[in-house]
Image (cartoon, rainbow, N blue to C red; front, top):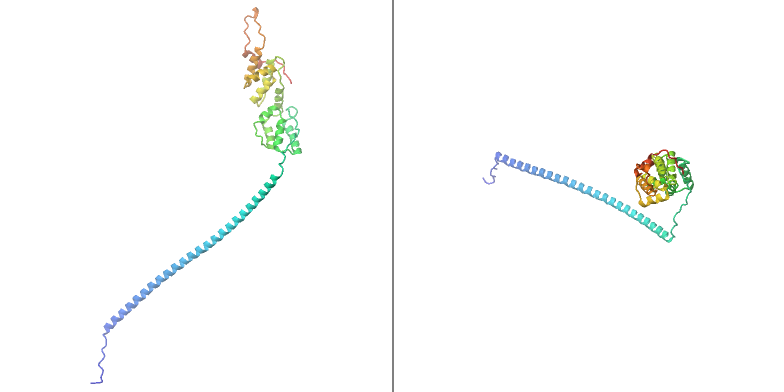
Length: 298
């Protein structure tokens, strides 16, 4: 039986199927692993792209900010150069002024404003005349206001002294119209300024002064006190100034005391033994209530 091959042995079909199943499972596992690996690689690729985009945005922002800073620095440098040029020009002008002789102070001559006494014209007419002179002479406000105050009666200056000196001419014009009454009040002020004690008639002087001063709308106490003392006789006026009364009533009482102390004392006769001596209150009432005295003019 030489030359004959042994019969081939074939695997059992069931065993072959088992092997095929194992191969399929291995292939499926390898495919799953490959899918997982591909998913991880895709995630890493996306993360890398996002990181790159962030870095690119940061790079662009940094470049833009650097350009802005460079522009700001260039502007600041130009501004500094401009300021240095201005300081150099100022320094040059100061040096030139230092070498020049000092300018002479500006002097303004008296414009010759008309004096205003309150009788000849109203305040509007007086101010209108001054307006024309100020415009004609082109006076600065400070000098125009100052010379206008000097042209006022002293009772108006007392009121104007309470007003700041650095006002404009228009403000001065408005204040004059607001603060001072019209013609009648000015005439009363002028009449009071002209009252003078005649002889020894102190009662008549006090009566006349109180009658006119009671008609004033604006009664500055200092003005009334000063005007009353100025109208007294020289001896009584000197006595008031030495005692320095602070109110008009005090000045009237002081003048009566001095007046009575200088009057001769006469002893009462037998026919007038019951007469009471004259006291200060009685004299004061006489001076304030008597209406039969003649008016005193300037």
